[in-house]
Length: 462
Ligand SMILES: [Zn+2]
Image 1: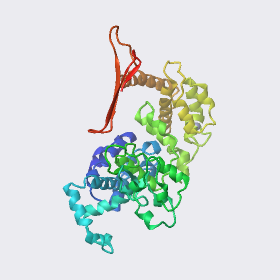
Image 2: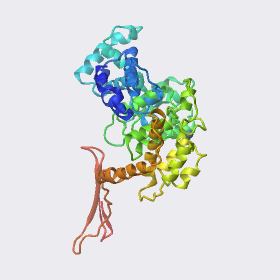
Image 3: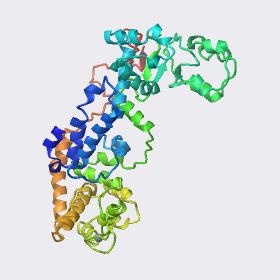
């Protein structure tokens, strides 16, 4: 709280506050969260501090929170700001502790915990969860559910895993896929006994599996060489390694997150971050215009204070207001910009930001458009709140800033971009031979293969 007071919320932009919340406020409790389950009321308090700071609320003065916290804590591509909720992050970090406990079984810390809390005496107790345990073990138990939902087994070529009970079919156990009674032989069947080459030994099961499940089992890749051990894999990453971010996303998805956000493209716009934030609010239909305020029950005249003709919505302000129409025509906006009034606001923003037209000032329209939206919005606010007259030259100001950005900022960025080199076969100089080679190995040390090809002889040297 002291840190926040020092930052003077009102002097930092919304985008700046997002950065501070992510890099400082959310990062402070990280260390503790890795090994302890924080009480829910403490997590809620941490979230509230972040929330209030983000929207500029203080104890003395409340500010409107324009977008719900449950949306803000989603990843950016799903409509959020990438800020993480304290509780879900805590659980994700504790799932990671479970992952480490499995992979570092021989480490001293893991041996102490496992010997103390997984002893036979505790296991045969009628209520093992009721027995006293340390805060660390309690924390591991808090993260266990998220951990167990995210793991699957990649079976080795001599797997002793149980066919029915272990999650080896892409994260699911056969028992989860098949209902009904199974025999004692079925229960004791291991994957090594069940596996044949090339076909599985379906006859070892007491009944015939549905063909869709057989296909899923046939599609499981087997480790033909290398380790014969079963490997624990993480479901939500491509390489099978645990990542806290993927665990977090899975946890918040669990608590009812349907993804209807259509604006993931806005984070890739090459423009100022403050303009991206404005677009983000537009995509959530959460710009504090009079129509929105009236909808929230705040008593105000909903007519547009600039033209006084229609109710002040963000759509009106940007596309329908007399002043907006004048501004777009003076800016020489492409006809499609003006004639597409029937489009939704989101589609209109998207189309203009991805337009391939070139403006008469010789820079792409898609570069000018975000500045135009920003200038319209800012100027509208100044007219309404600072009582300044309408600026009939706003389009020139907007254009000069877009040109400055294009020639001074964008070009500098371009210089830092990666340089791609086309890789292709080039003919060797006269009198030289070229041997094209490639190789791969299944591990180190392990089986390996190399390959060479002589183009002149048209011969493969295996
Ligand atoms: Zn108007």
